[in-house]
Amino acid sequence: MIPEGNWKRLTRAENIPPREGRAVSLDGLEIAVFNLGGSFAAVQNSCPHQGGPLCDGIVSGTAVVCPLHNWRFDLETGAAVAASLPVCLTSYPVRLEDDVIWVDASGGRRVYE
Image (cartoon, rainbow, N blue to C red):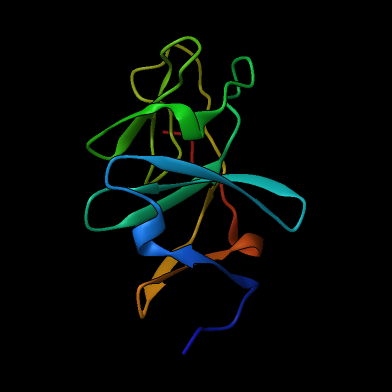
C-alpha cells in the first residue's frame, strides 16, 4: 500500500538497468531516476551548474557525475560531492513496491552538506 503524499507510479524496476538513470516528467518536474543496484534514487534531472542532463551521467556507488562538466552529486541526499560551492539537487522520496518504482513528487527536498 502506498503511503500518503503525491506518490506517482513511474515504471517497473526492470526498465532501469543497474547503474543507469532515466528521465521522467512528473507533475511538471523533470526528474532523473537511478538504479543503484539494489535501491533506487530520484533527483532533479538538471545539474545546477549548466543544466546538464543528470540521467545521462555516470553512476558510481551512490553518486552521479554530470556528463557536461564532471560535477558529482550524492544521489541519496542530492548534495554536491567535494564541491567548492554549496550546491545541491532536489531529491525525491522513492519506494519500490511489487517491482514498481514510485516517486513522491511533492516530497522534494534540498540538503546542503
